[in-house]
Image (cartoon, rainbow, N blue to C red; front, side, top):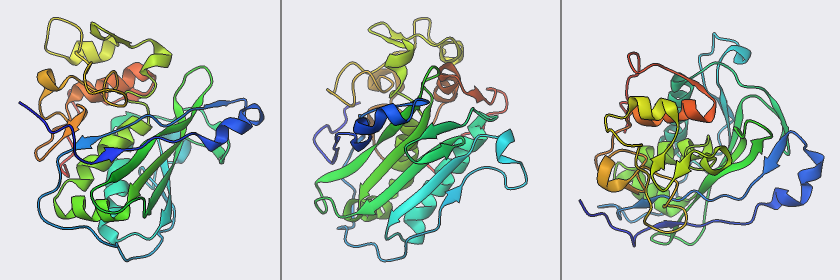
Amino acid sequence: MSRSTTSYRWDSHRNPWDDHQSAYDQVIPIDIESFARVRPPRGGTGGTTGGTTPAPYTSGDPVVPDANEFNITLVFQGTWTTALKNAFIVAADALSDFIMGDIPAASTPLGIVDDMLITAKLGFIDGAGGILGQAGPTAIRVGSYLPANGLMEFDSADATAYQAAGLFDDIVLHEMLHTVGFGTVWSYLGLASSSGFTGAQANAAYPGAALVPIELDGGPGTAWAHWDEAAFGNELMTGWIDGNNDLSYVTIASLGDLGYSVVSGATYAPPSFI
């Protein structure tokens, strides 16, 4: 099945925290290298979002202490509609359901973080049809390489268009998975080879006889950071997103290979919002 490779693109940038690495010996600042390629949305022409700047949000079960579960704190910047904000909230809550248990707090450029802090930015980049945004971890823990800080930034006009097309929830979850480490810390852990993904948990969940195949085409940001499109088709974590996406347990199991504790295949329930 073919996918468009010339539509909206992500843009990377130099990490401004690189100049301050010595002050934060518990994390390694890194550049953003996470990109999604998506089909142009049908209907909707973008535009400004209206709305307000939401208060920060921390995912997880409010009756469970944060020290006993995996939490993502979202810090919103820019002006957001309820629908665009909720796409981030449901994605963060889903990851708190998939990842079980706390991970060590870290001293980061944004303060002490337990477990993950993502800055969610919405504003003008270049208007509808150009750069959709950028996303990925910006600081990872020394030793484990689990992300502590991340950035997810969207052009407001493109975000509005993709929300109207019913794809923004999918894009946000895809990029949030990259921000917590999928594809973005594989190289630190030696999990990617030309033969496939080498993590034991993902391979135990994969029905094929060979290693879980990873994407080797598509250039920087797509190759070596996603599941293979030819093998996985409409799985959310291939390098191309279009109208009907699935999140397989292989993806969740691969988070276990990063060092997270994850739900079992028997109890895993795919998200209903994509």
